[in-house]
Image (tube, rainbow, N blue to C red):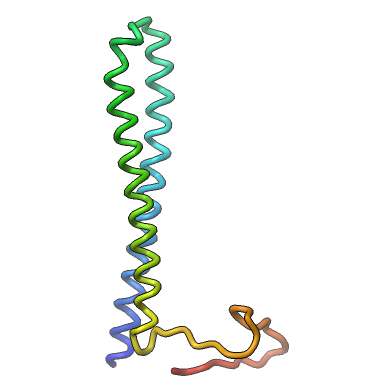
Length: 114
């Protein structure tokens, strides 16, 4: 029972981390589109580049902050992956070759149970 709870909790955490990473990447794509639209709009409207500079500065600051957040969530992901090695039932067990998983041959389904 406890093992299932640990596995479920770890799976939900891993899923959430991936979702946050995807949301940040999506937001970065939206910011890039916004910047492109801002450039086009400034060109079409003929507004002075000096007047539009404030918007560009704010957009640039937002993008830089989001890129920093992307790096931080990546660091969080790595820290969680490292921490899982200390949780019974989640540790990676390996032996033999340096490959992550042996190639599946035949129809045997071999599993290691920790």
